[in-house]
Amino acid sequence: MQRINAASVVGRANLTEEQLAELAGQLPGVGPLEITRLLPAFDDHATEELGLKLIAGLKQSKGNGRRPGRHASQPFCKIS
Image (tube, rainbow, N blue to C red; front, side, top):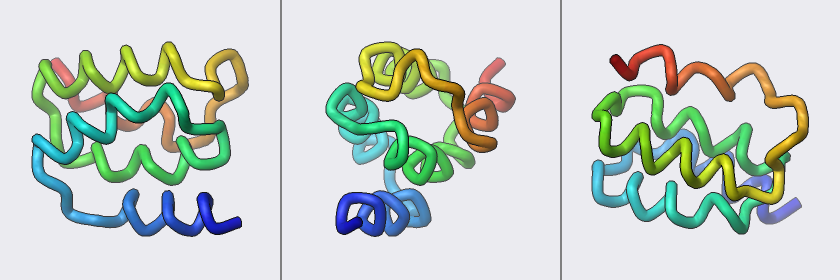
């Protein structure tokens, strides 16, 4: 429960691009319940570099292969 609560706090935080890049690199060790809570942190950051790091992290995550939550596709909508 602590991991889920911590993920919720981080997901609502106003993180810098550098912090988000670090978070994207940590996604391989994050489970599916935490990922859905972390993704909102990426909502307002639509750089291609960050998007590619996010996708790479999600592909390697423990939650990969499970049905994503409602927030899973939102960061990708803003990347052009």
